[in-house]
Length: 460
Ligand code: BES
Ligand code: MN
Ligand code: ZN
Image (cartoon, rainbow, N blue to C red; front, top):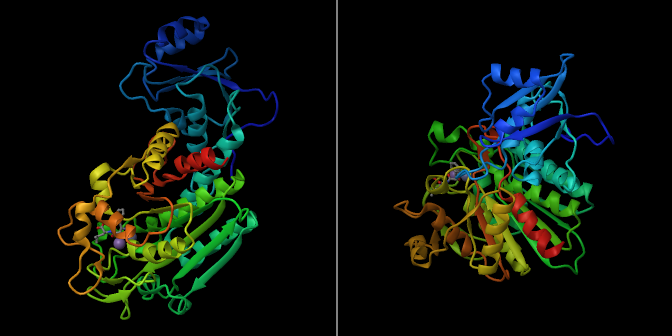
């Protein structure tokens, strides 16, 4: 991965001065006369996100002014400095004064340096930052690398990121940290009792599989991560309309973020016994595809009637969660791009999370805020549980009516979790529809950083 940081000691660096509407006048007045005149001539007002490079007498760049929201402003984007790598000419820079949050600004700089370069070279920006004093740059670098991994996996189109390639990416990560890796593929899923993963994935020529790796000291508390790895979601026979299908290469965003989270946990050597489970499938259309009204007996033994083949994510997660639950983990976490309803409720940048563990809920919310990796709690609302009823089976995967779609999906998953001491479910979007500072358009790392910090606090 391209590093956004200049690690050579005492490297010459161009200062970046952060200014706000309130501080700008004083900053400008303290500039050397030609630079002050240059700023005036450019009518520069240090508006949030605006950038001005000031020339030295020899024509080199002497310094950079970058606008931020006022201290007192109603909403401050702490990731604003994340747009600098896209605005600045190649070179090495340093923060000359403090942005609103130096650690998050440094992280934003790294996150904003990301470019998806798999199919086109020359995308890398050679803008580097000298790490500010007092910032744990190893931790920032770890988080940036994890975000890059998640983004690359999501941005890679499905023809190059099928169940097999996703498994290879997981295996690659597992081997880097000496984790034990296994993968159950194709008809072995039926033999080893993963009927729902098999049902969803069988219509694709690319065989479904269950990725499974274990890392860390077996005597440490068990933390199991489960990620939805739907490598493309056509909707199956209840086919998605073209507009809805257009970004469905991202439907393995849960798996990508689970791998990003695993990377951070293993790299930081947290004191956990980590298990990663990823059901990797393609929800395709073919003569042998599963159908509406089919009934399958899940791994857990609950029978599931198919109301809609497009509610496939909860099906593959159900079997993986059931397996995870069998060893009674201390903490069971699943991430997935599960419902359009989550987006209707909260938009693409604010994924809902679900848990009945009140302590965990407070910690998730606190770390989400602190890492600027926003998450918002929604309830596992018991009165809606009966909406999952089926007339012929134990439950239906797609309740009619469509109200509270993200909640009913969470309630569906909850039926498969019994023994885990604590369970957290996050219905992520995994995608940034329009670029924002530190968040380029495309695949996105969501929930992984907040959860990594939570795990660091508990098991660091
Ligand atoms: N992968 C989709 C969810 C999704 C859709 C995420 C759009 C982000 C954007 C999921 O498999 C799905 O299709 N869910 C259905 C469930 C419904 C059929 C009960 C949905 O949300 O419409
Ligand atoms: Mn679907
Ligand atoms: Zn899906």
